[in-house]
Structures are given as C-alpha cells and as structure tokens.
Length: 230
Image (cartoon, rainbow, N blue to C red):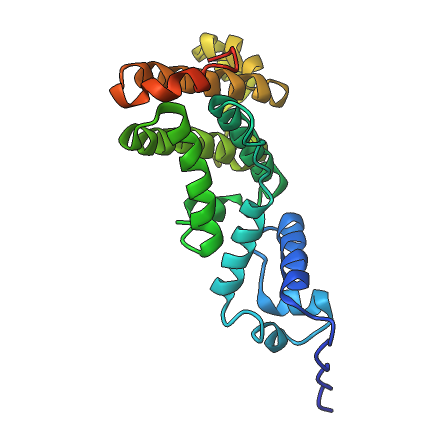
C-alpha cells in the first residue's frame, strides 16, 4: 500500500523552519541533521522545506544568520572599548547557546547580507577605538582569532572530554607531566570565564597600546579610554 503523502502545513514559514532546525541541531548535532528528519519534526514532507530554502546550504546560511543575529551589541553610548568587550562576551554566549552548530559558524565567511552587516558593526567598534582603518582591520581579525579559538575550544574541545583512542590516565600525567598535573585545575569549566576575561583584556590592552602609537588615533583616544579599564 502506497504511503499517503502529507499535505504542506499552511503555517510553515522560514522562521518556524529555522527555529526547528536550530533546536534539532542543538539537541542532536549537525552530523545527524537532514532535511528529511527536519521535515518529520515539523510534520511535513522534506520537499516542503525547499519552497523556503532552495538547498540545504541555503538553510545552513539561514541558521548561521539566525545565530549571529542573536548577538546583542552594547549601546552605542558606551565607550568603544567597553562596546568591544560586550560584543565579544555576547558572541561567546551565542557560541555556547549553539555549540553544536558553532563549528560551521566559526568557519563561515559571513557573506550574506546579515553576515556582512554583522562584520561591519564589529569593525566599526574597532575603528572607533583607534581611528585608523588598517589598525582596526588587523585588530578585528586578531580579536576574532582569539574569540573563535576560545569558543571552539569551549564548545567542541574541552567540553567533549578526551579525544584520543587511548587517553592517558591521571597517574601518567602526574608522573610524566608534573606541571600539567598542577595546572589542570585552571583548565576546568569553572575557570573558563576568568581565563577568557584575562585573554580578552590582554588583547584589548595591546590594541590600545598600538592605538596610542597611531597618529590617526589621537582624536578618538579620549573616547576609547573613558571606560577606565583599558
């Protein structure tokens, strides 16, 4: 007997599909994600999804846009350095909310309209800090390296536990790697926030020092340091 095809859900739309896809990936991982399984979760045929997203890649683009669109930027009334701190913290929070999708987000070029506007916003904060386009561009990239590396490690590295086929035990580490054994307590999850903040402050301090040497930064230097922490 031929299986009866399900009628398209008149309430189906892009936003509902994206919400369901994000929830499914957050729960089951990207490896187990298929359009068929998403359709099953929504109670429709997979082909119904293609009316809204021409391909799976189009849907993935939509998921990345939704994730980065959830990053809350600090008010523009704050000093630029404080805005950068807030943006970096908010981006890290997003990575933890969507940890199983994050490897895709991290390597995505963000070349959709939503993506390039997101880049423009962060780049503008970097420019407001130093007032020099080259310094802002290089600092934007360097801060991104740190932020994405930290987010990947926290969501897909340490959080996953040992990755080797035959991981060493504590006795081996204590015997062969005494400094690592003593330092391990600082690598635990309850230390991540403090470590992230230390690295972020180190990088922002280096950025501010570079900006003080940039002639173009003179007019913006006063605004950048009003936070009292840079």
